[in-house]
Structure formats: structure tokens, C-alpha cells
Image (cartoon, rainbow, N blue to C red; front, side):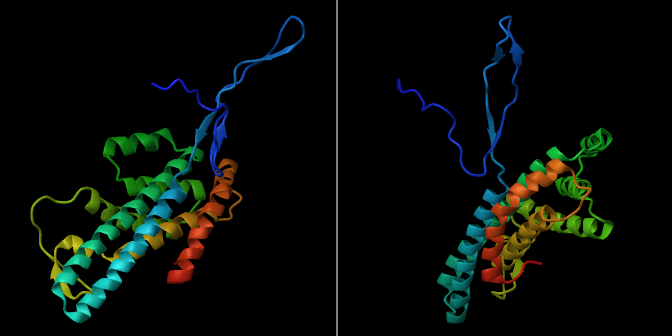
Length: 250
């Protein structure tokens, strides 16, 4: 076992959050100020990290998809099989990472939202779906109006439906589906996790984070505004990458 002691202090990376959980000050009989030992807590918001991971997998999905389309034109079934698998594997990972990014964003946002205890109890008792909880917290936190709130809920429902297909796949066999671009009926996973679906889900996930975090509203809690102001510079580079490659976000 090594006798080396860790370097003094705490090593931090740009974007890390630091807090002091407790600090006690007192004045002794000599009139000197005494302080309790200072302990630091550190944290990382994972939203931008997971969006970046999702984007990298999306690029891998796109690459496999392009090769799949070439194999289709060549009528090379061996290559079709190879790139069909690669496309779906990368697409599944992109979809998963995009959903995790939304979960990470939600976890951070809800710390700044006063959720009524009655609402929390109802969620627990009814086993309320994750996407419904997220959309409700975003509605409360960002003061979303009914049309925006309804649209957000539908997008989240779709995204988490695809995530659940990856996390909780049905065992055994199931009806095949059409892979639209390949124009072949095949296993549902190849059709579900193809490039076009992964692209749509990533784009919508990135759009949700951007549009809510940059939403100007004087009624939004100051702590939530501060969190968003810190997050935006980490998300903007991803928006620029998307716009350059795929066009403007929805």
C-alpha cells in the first residue's frame, strides 16, 4: 500500500461547483476570531457532458448510416448487415445519452424549484412516469405557458419511450419493422435506433435544454437563473456544432 499522501487542496476543473457545507465563527476570551475547520463539497452538472457524449455517438451513427446507404446501392448484403448493426448500436447509445442528459438537467433544475409536497406524494403513490415529472418541474421552474408545456411533455414522452426500448428491451421475438431509408423490413431494433431517429431525439433534447435555460423571464427564481447562466456557455458550443452540420435547431 502506498504511503504517498495526496497533494494538498482540491483540484478543480472549469465548470465545477464548490460549496462550504458549514462554517462556524466565534470570538474567544482574548477577542480573537476563531473558525471551525473548513470543508469543501464539490459537484459537476452532467448535462453538457451527456449531451456531448450523445453527439459523438450521433456522428458515429451518421457515419454508419452513410456506409449503409452505399451498401444498399451496391446491393451488398454482407455490408448491409455490418453497417445496419453499427448504425443501430451507435444510435441506441446516442438516444440513451440524450435521455440521460435530460435526466441530469432535471436533477439540477429541481433543486431550484419549490415542488409542493402534495405533488411529490401524488407522484410516489401513482408511480407517475418520469417524463411527466420532468415536464411538470420544467413548467413550474421556467413558468411555461400551456402550449409550450404540452409540447414539451409530448417531446419528453417520445424521447423516454425510445430510451425505455433500449433499457428495457422485450425478450424473445417481436414483429419486424420497416427500416425506412434501407427500405427493408428487419428487426425492430434496427428500425428504431436508426440515424434519423437518433438525430431527431438528440436535436430535440439539445433544443429543450437551450430554450429553457435561455428563457428570459423575471419570474424565474434567482438561483435557477444563476444555474442557467453558468450552464449556457457549456451548451452553446454544442449548438454551434449542430447548426454547422445539420442546420438550425427546432
